[in-house]
Length: 113
Image 1 (cartoon, rainbow, N blue to C red):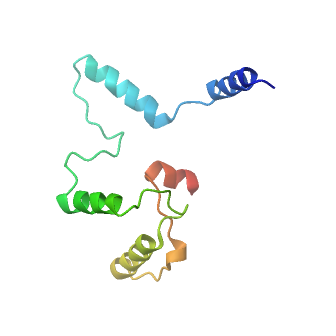
Image 2: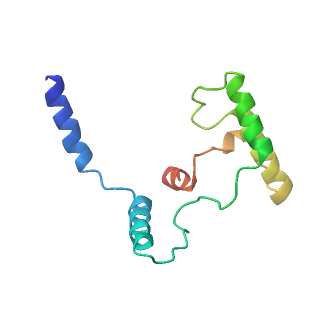
């Protein structure tokens, strides 16, 4: 199979994948906003405040230290440990790091669940 044939096959399959529901809603919201309607963007998990400076500083430092590669699928162990400890402290539920998965957002978490 030639590269062109493979590309055409892949494009055809990609065309059959339905768009993400959240993206459909985002598109509808953008259209309504363009019409001058006031939109309250509850459809995206985008806060209306800036990232706190200590988090930005740490992110820059981690990049400069070479932390630029993919992480393990479940997330890095120190973060998973910290999340488990926080759950135990706040909710009194004994949770181990092996019971914690870090996702990029709620949509990914729901799909995994």
